[in-house]
Image 1 (cartoon, rainbow, N blue to C red):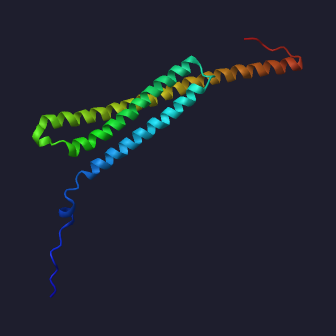
Image 2: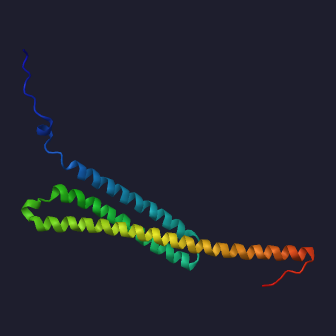
Image 3: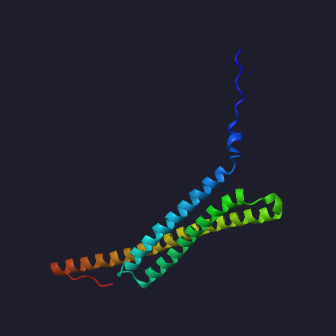
Length: 161
């Protein structure tokens, strides 16, 4: 019988690999946050270059930009905090209270990002509904004007409301 030499196990060669998921998650969140910030900055520049927007539209866009920039920044912060809290801080030396406070703060920031997202969704939805209502009113007024002009062209009296 041939005896195999004792080969070192993979985990002995590489050490513990439990930090990898936190590092991957952190990198993903930082990349998403930076990407969103770059994208939103481009959108903001295009919006500011638009000279036809109303003051109300400009104010809405400013608030939207502020919310979305805050979300991007918080995603970057959370992306840094997750790996930092996972493998850079020795929680055993600091005690359970420090770790609890740290991870609750990460969770609180995550919930704040979710609330900002929901707020942005509702704000955009409300803004869209108001704009659609105004467009329908303008459409109705234009349709009435077309009917008036058609009646006038035919020589018929157009009833006034």
